[in-house]
Every structure is written in C-alpha cells, then in structure tokens.
Picture: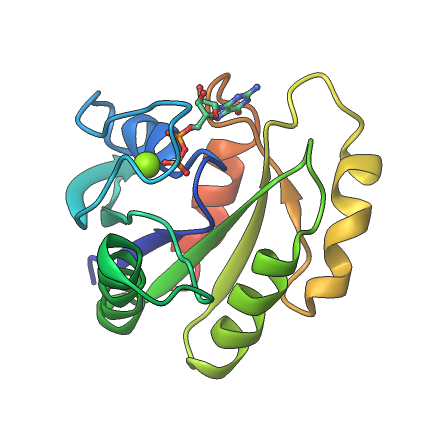
Length: 163
Ligand code: GDP
Ligand code: MG
C-alpha cells in the first residue's frame, strides 16, 4: 500500500518546508507569510524502499468565518479525510496555542492515525521541546526540524511502519 500522508497545522509551523523535504522538491512555497499555500499540494517520496504520497495543506483555521480562510479550512478537512495518516505539525518555539488545541480536538475525532511533529526543534532538547504538547491528547509528540532534517526520517519510518 502506498499511503497518503496529510500535513496539517496552523499557518507558519513549517508544513511546506516539511513537504519539500519529504518530496525532495521545492514545490511548496515557503514563507513567513501565513497562509501562502492556499491549495492542497500533492507530491510523493520514498524512504527505506517504501513509497508514500504526501499532501501539503494551506493551514488549518478552525475559528474563521469568511473568504480564503474558510476555503483553506475546507481544503484541509478534505485532505485529512482523504489521507491514510496525518502528521500534525506544531511549533516547538511557540508552544501549544488555542488553535493547536482546536485542531487536536478535531483530529481526535477523524479516525486517522495522527503523529504530532514538534517542529523547529533543531538544537533543542527533545524532552524539553516536546513536553508542552502532551496536553494535546494525541500520540507521543516527536521533535523534528523540517528545515534542518533532524528527526524527519525517523518520523517517516514510524508512520510508514503502520502500513
Ligand atoms: P507553513 O505555513 O506551515 O507551510 O510554514 P512554512 O513551511 O512556510 O514555514 C514557515 C516559516 O518557518 C518559514 O520561515 C520557514 O523557513 C520556517 N521553518 C520551517 N521549518 C523550520 C524549522 O525546522 N526550523 C526553523 N527554525 N524554522 C523553520
Ligand atoms: Mg505552507
């Protein structure tokens, strides 16, 4: 089986950076400007001989009410719905935000396996950077750095071992 992995999380946590690393491309636009990726974005990759599809999303904004943000939330929900697994990306330098909690609440209900990737963790102590995120009530959070690559391969192995 070639599983589809959806990358979700609030804007600016590093979804597109992770997408580019997982697909070995620079296809996804990375910027400090939140919400740059407005569409779902598909790619594929392979690790340890196991292939996978990956879907970047524009950012999950559960508490929004109009225009582009509603469209982004809708796209993300659809991506989760179509995926076999979800990597929920959070920002280890910011800590848990109210938006993260809302996303977690949703992900607990979707019946897909979810991994919590605590991003931007380069140079940080793993136990310290992940500690905050246990309160999301999902799987054990793992520290990664999408831009430096730390922890990404391990996370992917873990995800793919379920399929
Ligand atoms: P998205 O909105 O979730 O797709 O986030 P982006 O991938 O566009 O990244 C948002 C910002 O975070 C950019 O400035 C990235 O360079 C930065 N970023 C992404 N991953 C990391 C990381 O692992 N470490 C650090 N320090 N910055 C990162
Ligand atoms: Mg993006």
